[in-house]
Image (cartoon, rainbow, N blue to C red; front, side, top):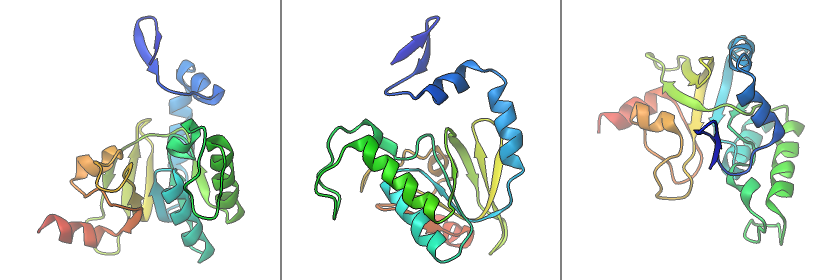
Length: 187
């Protein structure tokens, strides 16, 4: 845990961009204004770990307008020294692996929205409508579908939005439509 003037400032590894964004008090408002101007995504994935990046690549390969919103693309792999359990990758380091995830997603024009924390998800009130993803800085992103990922199978989701809307934490990254979310809630 990192403290500034006796208050929590950050935890774990922080990149210079993250530090500057926290120090610059006007950065959140500028980011919110810029992000609010984005067009509606066909699919917006919440979480930038390997599952989120894979979901984004698969969606974007089909020509679907795809975005990822995450605090850090690569997720926890950025804090991992050695990775030896990812299929087809015999051995790598976390930051190198995260860079490869980002390069692969960018190859398919995935809109990567990094340095952002999701605060809530508001499913569409109508079937096939647009859902709203609200970020900590107040910006709202719109999406036809959204995806939320847990830390690992059976875990409670790290996506605050899933807790605030009552949606389940999925064992793997999964795209959820507003209609299917309502159906699950009524069970």
